[in-house]
Length: 241
Image (cartoon, rainbow, N blue to C red; front, side, top):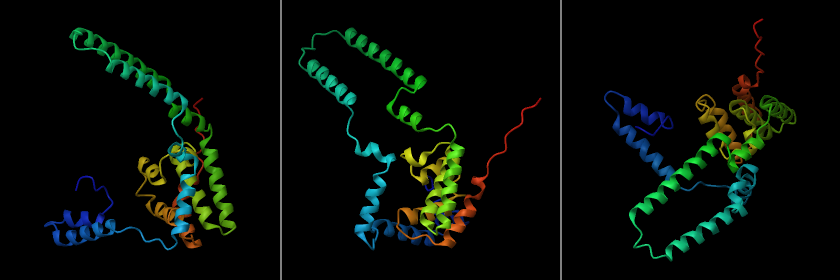
């Protein structure tokens, strides 16, 4: 049962019985395998394709569309030249101690670079996250919740649900990850340890945004109740005199 997590509670319940109900578990596993083996049925393929391209056009997936930077191309060229030069040398007569020295120097340089990266965050990804981070994530989350309320007043419940989930994700992460993170909402909720608590909210969001299913008022009000604890502004802690 290792690795199943809590994605198949019925099957896990069958296997945890005493004695285990292997027959029912086998039927459920067969049904799951059959469902995974079938491609998803899409009523409007053109609309689904347009929705997919719209999602991939978001800033969080910019890295998938961008090619190598000039800096990366330069270092690729340098390494190619070095390897080409080494390949053309007659290295048979070089003693072992030379290669051990080269290996030691390379290991020392790699250790220094790794230390600099860890201590200073000197990476392209680190710079991106630092640039995208806001000093007041709580204010950003409250703005998202306000946008959700405004969309609900307009009866645009799909947009309201999207903004509501963005507010919850911002509260959980402490960063406005909605625009910049490569993680999905499901991954953000899982990393916070609140996936089961927010599963209903997550499923409604995925059906609306990824599945293209319109969100009704009843669905939104249910999601609104789940998100209610994350809309509260924490009270400031008074310092002891």
